[in-house]
Length: 448
Image (cartoon, rainbow, N blue to C red; front, side, top):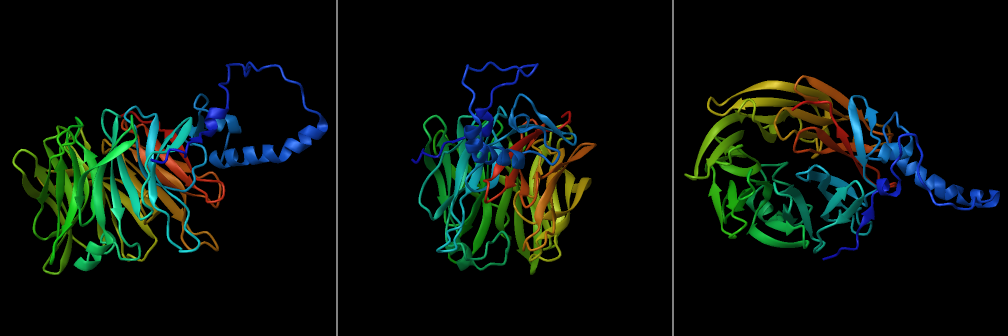
């Protein structure tokens, strides 16, 4: 285990400000003019990254990163900003107490081989950021999920050639390509020891590991590749005993990628991609744990329509999901992301929110709140001399309230990392290869 990656958060270097701005400091001699000039480059190097981490109408640097002096960004309130992180930030999740995040962090591309570095998991908080997983360079660690107690993190490892088409982007990829491109394992990391262990491994992709509400069961989407076929299903694991079972969905489902638990923990809702009569269907299934039975609750025959994220609204006892429609898979942006509420019994869905972009067509461009009532998307714009459009702001909507969180300054890109468990905060990643990526956590003026 490599533990030599601790990175102090910039907020940890600053004292807490008293009400009248008075801070006790030890008596020191004042530097002369020559010493002050010699310190100028170091001062600039310290202040410039802080300005980058702030918002477009940034307050003073120490106020922008101090958790004790949050600033306003529109109606969202900046709570804290991490120090620079050595790589590109991916998906993440808040700890149960909302004080830390665990995120995917991918290092810079290898200039010799032109291959992207593998993703590792980092624990990021107000004061410190550190790498908590390590392993072979061919294996990435993805989709971390904190258990409800806060003592363990479930995540997926993914190994395989990077130049093969992803079955997520191209569901028609043949069996041989899927089998050779993906070897997955489901792992548990004990945060007290930083030791991890396998709980499930398959030849094929694992996606969306999710804990049951009480933390006793772990489930994940699992696509199993056989000699002549690909079958999508769900794997259910008892972490205490190590017992696991794989349950296939309808025989026409060749890929499962999203999963959510019912609030009472009795059943799962799984998103599958199916092919019947040469038509592609995006579908939702329920899986009952007691009877191991499955049922299709929603289906739409449209290969350009994508079902992106799932959550449950406990107030409405309804499943909520985000979707978009893409005219061309080679496009780098979509026109809007839509939040739907689905009646599981009736199998009908109604639109409850829409955020118009263009929204970046990438992970982190959209994120649904845990209670299903909120949606955040990163909206893009085309910048001259830049191949891909950069996200210039995060739009959010919760119930009847909405707002905009702008990126600090160009040419940074930004995306949504996670909503907090209480649906009150959003973590936003600001990407910058030169100054280092950062995470900023904003509190929203919402009342769940």
